[in-house]
Structure formats: C-alpha cells, structure tokens
Length: 147
Image (tube, rainbow, N blue to C red; front, side):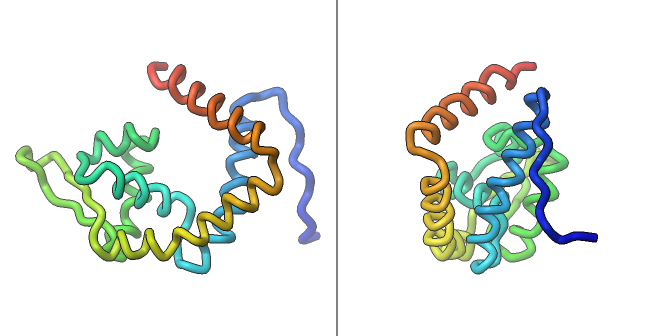
C-alpha cells in the first residue's frame, strides 16, 4: 500500500467538502500542537473555558456546537490531565466545568504552537479569504443552529 497522500475527491456535497477541509486544517494545527501534548479539539476547549469561566456542561455543548456525548468524550482527557475540574451544581445532575490553574498553564504553553499554526494558515490562504471564511462559517453555524 502506498504512503503517498492522494488528492481528495471534489464533491458537490457541502457537508463532505466542509468535513474534508476541517480534517486538513485540523491536521495542520495538530502538527503544531503535538509538541505540547494537545490536540486542536483540546486546545479549543481550554480556550473556551478560559474565556467563559465556570460553565454548565450543557452550555459548553452549545458554545462548542458539540453534542453532549462528543463533548464528554473530548473532556475526559482534559479531566484526566487535571486541566479542567468538573463538579456537581445545585441540581446534582448539573455538571459545572472550569479550567484549572494547570489548564491555564497548559494553554499558555500551547499559545506559541497555536500562533505557528495560525501563521502557517495565513501563509497558505490570503488574509481576505481567511476573513471571508470566518464570516461565512460563523453564518453557517448561526443559520443551522436551529435546524
């Protein structure tokens, strides 16, 4: 079996095209973050938690556009590494999540790797295209959120 990377098949399916693009971009960010022991999904969760403060798991699901099962799976390694803490809320079914001091330290350590990934993307994609993509993707999330 050949180890060369094949060109992805072009597709008329918006979902498939977005998934292909997401996987390609995630690989680039993961390459940079690997050196600090994080994946792109973990870095993103730590950033959101650092900004949001203590948040209910259901609200974090909304902030990340992740379903509860996927969010729980992505939080587990962060909890195991003690980068986040989870405690019960007033209602014992409610889970409150916060980033820990160790999580903030990991986020700070990962900052330069994330900046390198951003710089690599800026070198590959013109700035005006990046800005249009950010606008379009935010709009896609907004209009499909109620579907």
